[in-house]
Length: 129
Figure 1 (cartoon, one colour):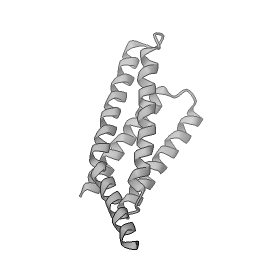
Figure 2: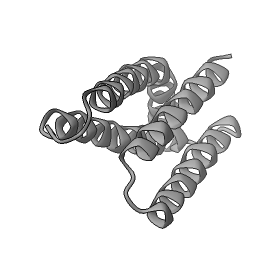
Figure 3: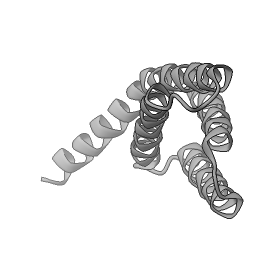
Figure 4: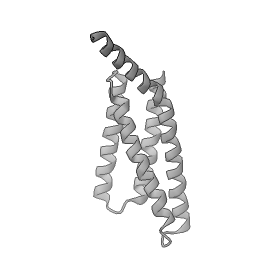
């Protein structure tokens, strides 16, 4: 149940990242590589989360954190680029802000799952002693 919501928000986060990447791309070969890597990382760690690998959501959280930083870079770049048309700047900033909000919502959804993983690991280590 919670895994489905986490996967859905992850997919939305991925789509927003891809849209922002397309808006900011200058080289189509690099764009394709970036999109393929992002899809592999998002889908791979979501699948690992479904099969209950302990650290799947931890690593996905790091990946989403890195992509959130890239969204902040997009916002900063658009604010500092007066030569870009205003509509393009506004659209990129708006999509990046929505992406940051979606990523923060992902952390809100994933935190109980991550916390449960930590509790399970600690309990297992206590039993070993």
